[in-house]
Each structure stands twice: as structure tokens, then as C-alpha cells.
Length: 638
Ligand code: C2E
Ligand code: MG
Ligand code: MG
Image 1 (spheres, rainbow, N blue to C red):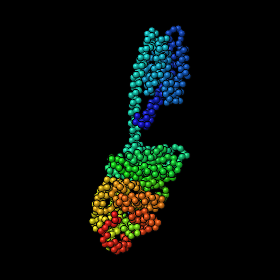
Image 2 (image 1 turned 180 degrees about the vertical axis):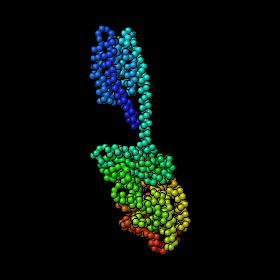
Image 3 (image 1 turned 180 degrees about the horizontal axis):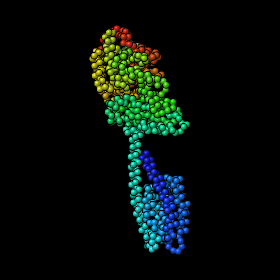
Image 4 (image 1 turned 90 degrees about the horizontal axis):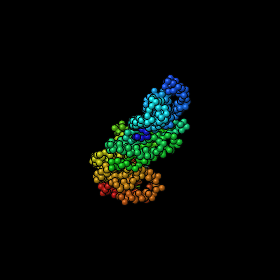
């Protein structure tokens, strides 16, 4: 049997056959009872040998057969139709009435016809034990009556006392065939149940992952909704894998499918009992959590789902990193139908994606407003990219004495209705739409051009750092694009630093390694941005050829007071690995002093300067700021 559903179908169809056979036997018993009375009144007196009429005992027997066993058997069949006992009771009643019929007709109603016919009908139960009961009754009857009233059994008076043995053999012979037929019929029922179950699974389960599909989830939701009236709270979690489309395109669909199955496996492990996990197609998964009394339970599940994807996946001998964004909606607050709940959770998920992915967001009026704004922004992004509506601002990275060492190029966009939109809002949108690739090229070229310009105008050696998103770095020809930007602008490679996040580097470690080697070989440096927010895996630091780590704001602001020893150890380790350390988000003098004491090489933050338009950078750099001789020395001296 293929599974529980197939077993259920099998039990159902067998049950149907049992009920049908019950009905046939009940009708037959009633008809035979009437027939018995007719035979007892009409045939019986004439066949009875002897002077005394046999009418009375046969008629009495016919009348009493009803209350004695026919009506009770029908009653049992009506009251407990599916019980095994019912089948045996009906079998006994059927055989007893057959016996009475052949007896009352003095053997004129052929015994064989009755016995064999009854066994054949009882075989409809597909239960050899019922045949056994019937056969035992037949054998006992033939043995007893065959000796004392052979005429009523065999229709003749003189008969060999061993004739009953012959009859029993015939019964046994028929039983063998009936059992074989029942076995075949059971096999057919099983085959039918299996294929029906497979059809059901196909229609209600996702082929690739084996999870429930949309249809089954709808059924689950409907039956939950029709169920208990008191418990009326539920949650729906909508999970979408971050940048999976790109991963799929890069890996090819065969590996993408394996990755999806592995993701589904981990998710179902994390979901546990009491919740339905469904795949909605592509890289979208939905969890329906019934009867959640507190919102925190659903949010905790969302976090658990995200955490379960944290460790890398191993597919086809390679390591892959997968993250997801989760949106949560609640019943009945956000909708009374599955579609409404799904839409609300989808909106929250969109906000989670736009806020930088790998997070869980709960639907709320504010989230809906944000989502609408985001969608509007997303719609106008493409036009803004093609009509070059973006500017660059530059924020200095300073030596510990406050002198600018380089400037980070940061995208700025002044939206016609939303005003200045934060890059943390529009960069993820640019990334998911792929627009970051052309715009990123523009940023790179523009940053190189500006840096070369201010170096030429002021004689400063301050370089420029450019943020590179995963999508850009993933381009096969990314190193060539960098070389071209350097060639067009005339900027020295040593003045350029590319900022990459761990996520971008770890998407495809082999490609990242080869890109990094080529870029660094040309003299361009690489910084690991936002260190402390993602995986912050020190082992990757040793594996990947990078030059600088940039400690994220979070590290500097939130962790600094609590984790000074960790930070000190991290900076020490970075220096041992010949990496330089930049602390981002420095806002106070205390932070500056502490980070300088801990050994940070460079600082960046509002304490020194906010991001500035390019013209202000030039005026910030004093002419001849760097001695002529150090111009050729690379910025951020090793
Ligand atoms: P990031 O690369 O970590 O950039 C530093 C961010 O921290 C900038 O935010 C900067 O304005 C902000 N910041 C600097 N000092 C302080 C401080 O003292 N306190 C606080 N709270 N924040 C400070 P911004 O400009 O909003 O950029 C946000 C993120 O957007 C950047 O983070 C970067 O990941 C992304 N981004 C910006 N421009 C680009 C770009 O051209 N390409 C790509 N791929 N991403 C970009
Ligand atoms: Mg950066
Ligand atoms: Mg950063």
C-alpha cells in the first residue's frame, strides 16, 4: 500500500462492498423467508412421507425462522453494518434458511443451488472467515440431516451414509475458488486505491517537494474554518526565498530544483506539527498555523524558519547559501479568507524583502502603507534609472586623526513625490529587478571619474570606495567592467576600493574567489562591508582574498559597550591576517576614542561628516593635502 491515503481508500472501497453485500443478503433473507412459508404450505405436505401431515412442523419452523434468526440478523446488519460479527451473523442466517428451504421442500429445492449460491454471495465480503462460518454450518447440516433425513437433503430416501462427505468436499472445492477470487478482488481494490491515492497526491501535493499545494491548503483552511467555533485565531506565514530566481538562472534548473527540495525538507522540519506547510510554486512557501493564541507564536515560527536556512546547503558537491523573507498575517484581523490572508502576508513579505531581506515582518496598517509606497517607488525606479535621476554623495573614511583617507560613494535619489528615498529602500528593489547592474556600472564609472578629478585638482591621494551588490559581482565579466572604468577615468587602481558584503561573496564562492584574485591582481582593493551583520564568519576571512573589513554600525553602536573584548580580538585577528579595519557609523567622541584605542585603522561616520555632494568633497580636501611623493603610494597603506 502506497501510504495512509491509499489505505484509507482501500478501506473505503472494501467497506462499500461489505455494505452492498449486507444489503443483498438482507433482501435475500426477507425474500427467502416468504418463500419458505410458501414452500411450507404448498410443497411440504406432499413430499412428506408417511401418514401424518408435515405441514404443521414445517409451517411452524417457517414462521418462527423470522423472529428467531432472520429478523435479528437483519437488525444486526442495520445497526452495525460494518462490524465483522454482522457478516458472520448474516452468513449463518443465510445458510440456516437455505437448509430450511431444502428441508421443507423435501430436497426439491436443490441443496447444491442453495449452498453454492449462498457461498458465492457471501464471497462478496472478500473475507475467507465468513466463508469458513458458512462452510462449517453446511458441513454440520449435511452430516446431521444426511444421516437422519437424507430425503430432505438429497431428495432421495436411500443414500450412502458417506454422501455427506462428498458434499463437504464440493463445498471445500468451491471455497478454494471463492478465496482465490476474493484474493484477486482484494488485489484489484488495492491497485485502484493506490492509483486513486496517487491521483489525489498529484492533485493536492507539489510534485517536486511533496509538500501540500495551494488546493490542499485551501481544503485545510476550509475545514478548519468550518470546525470549532470558539477557536478563531490562525496565522499565515508567506515565505519567499531571496534572489532565488537569480540563483536558479545561475545554477540551472536541475540544481535549482534539488536546492528547492532541500529547502522544503528543512522548512518542514522547522514547521513541526499543528501547521500546514505548502509550496505555492516557484520559491514561495506558505505555512498555515491553526489556532494560534498569541502572535508571538507565529513570529517565533517565522524566525525559526529563517534560522533553519542559515547554514549552507550542499547540492551536487557545492555549498549554497539561501535566505528568505517572511510575511505574517493573522485571521481574522487581516482577512477572513485564505486569499485575503495570503495577500496580507505577501505584502508584509514584500516589505521584509525591501528592508534588506532575511527577515520576518508582520502585517499592519503601517506595513501596508510602506508596501504601497515601495511598490510606487519600484514602479518609478526603472524610469529613474533610464533617465539618470540618481546622484552620488561621498562620505569620508578618515584616519584616526580625522584626516580623510578615502570617500565612500553612496547613491542618492530624489523621488518626485517621496523626496529623498533611502538607498536601503531602493537598492534592494534595484537588486531584485536587476536594474542595479546598469546603475552600478554608472556608480563605478562616476565614482572613478570624480575621484580622479579631485585627485588631479587637489593633489590629494584620497581614494574612493564603491559599493558592489551581489547581482553586479555575479556578472561573468565584472572584473572587466572595473578595469574599463579605471581605464576610462584614468584613476589608479590603488585608489579604488570595492565594498562587498559577505552575502555577495558567498553566493558562489568559486566565482567570487576568481573575481577577487583578478581584481586584486590589478591593484584594486576589496573591503568586506557591514561585517557583523551577516554570517560574520571568521573562517571566510581567511579563505577569501580581501584587504579590509568594515565593522557595521550595529557593531559600533550596539555591541561596542558590551562586547569590547570581542571587538578587540576581532581587530587583533584582522591585523594578524594583514587586514585593515574600518569602523562605520561613528557618531560620538566616546566611540571614536574607544575604537581608536582598540586599534581600528579608519573611522567613518556622522561625527566626521555626512555624505557630501561631489563638489563639497573637493572643497574639503586641502590642496596639496598629501605630499607629492605619497601620491603613488596606495591609499590605506598596508
Ligand atoms: P553602507 O555601504 O554600509 O553605507 C554606509 C551607510 O551608513 C550609508 O547609508 C551612510 O549614509 C550611513 N552612515 C554613515 N555614517 C553614519 C553614522 O554615523 N550613523 C548612521 N546611522 N549611519 C551612517 P546610506 O547612504 O543610506 O546607504 C545605505 C546602504 O545602501 C549602504 O550601506 C549600501 O549598502 C547601500 N548603497 C548605497 N549606495 C549604493 C550603491 O551605489 N550601490 C550599492 N550596491 N549599494 C549602495
Ligand atoms: Mg558600504
Ligand atoms: Mg556598511
